[in-house]
Image (cartoon, rainbow, N blue to C red; front, side, top):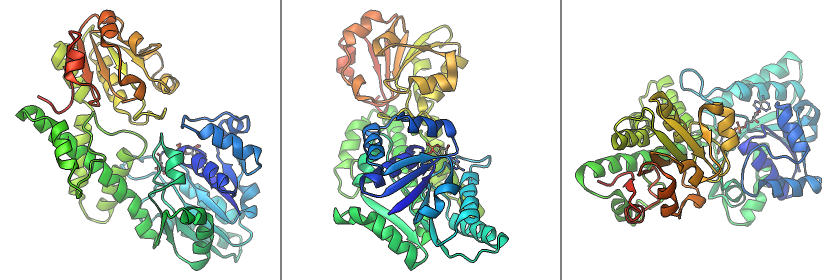
Length: 437
Ligand SMILES: NC(=O)c1ccc[n+]([C@@H]2O[C@H](COP(=O)([O-])OP(=O)(O)OC[C@H]3O[C@@H](n4cnc5c(N)ncnc54)[C@H](O)[C@@H]3O)[C@@H](O)[C@H]2O)c1
């Protein structure tokens, strides 16, 4: 079975490599020619554990190839997956220009039945827009060619993307006809064999499922952060409360970690886009509005704690541990670390940063506005305070005595609640975390 995947980013490249691993012949397409050149030369443009080995293996086996031209491969494939970016537009909705551009190419180029599958996260109703574009393009060239639209939202997590794709909790597929259903069934059959659930539904429900899932997860994060902030004021310990509620099977313990807010390429934009869809349909998403408002203030919480502990930030040196929006990725899109760094620089502090994989990404984004340290200890040299922003494994058991020795001050802010007060205090350092008095 041959397929094309358009958009060779976190989702497209992982999906392409994983489908190839299952035996499909996959052509990955991207308009970014430098990305395609890198991939052709065996260089993976993003950091994702295990991805290089997977890509190399499938390229060598002849099942995975890269091109900038969808036109050239579209009539060799049975389905075209659209996995291009859908960043926020000016009013908070999803910018669908890349999705629409793929639909135009599809309509202009197909010469026989084909299925256009949207894997990008797109607002409910997008499939209708995509279908109309394809139909218009076919009409323009007087072509009477059958096609079907499908929706196959992706639920992988950066940092565990390959495992998530290969062993998903579920695969959601929205279809409008039997032919696309058969194509999708064939492609996902290996996952059915492993007893993973493939859930077929109508297209609007599939489109909505992705937003509902991300909004639910974001809600849990903002919920526990709200509780954490109240714990700080009232003398309760959010870590205890989290355990206390997480053991209730109806609640569960996942995604209930207090911290410095959610970031990344999905939750912030998808929460906004869901509110925008509500607005367009005359419905106010009040829970989601609150989720976003709590997160916005939570992203500033480490900066606020630093200010409180140090008095003023002017002239102070702050070491920042972790830049990526979460561990095991180099993705810094809307990372809480960026909110903190911006605030520190604005208040006149100097900043020294360290992240195990996102240093180049940080340089690309903010250049020399900060000092780039060689490790977490180097970032602490002469620092008045250090702040943990991403809970990388390598940060979990530091030598506090070595940190105390190199620091000028003694303030430690734990933005992800991974340390304990006793271990940090034992070296004469002052410990602050989220949700404890
Ligand atoms: N990153 C995640 O963890 C994740 C998880 C689930 C769903 N999603 C969704 O998947 C989609 C893609 O996300 P991503 O993180 O992979 O994005 P990304 O920015 O990493 O990759 C998108 C790619 O699409 C390419 N592109 C843009 N326009 C194009 C066009 N017209 N033709 C060909 N290529 C084009 C870009 O050059 C880029 O390489 C988004 O809708 C996102 O919301 C992302």
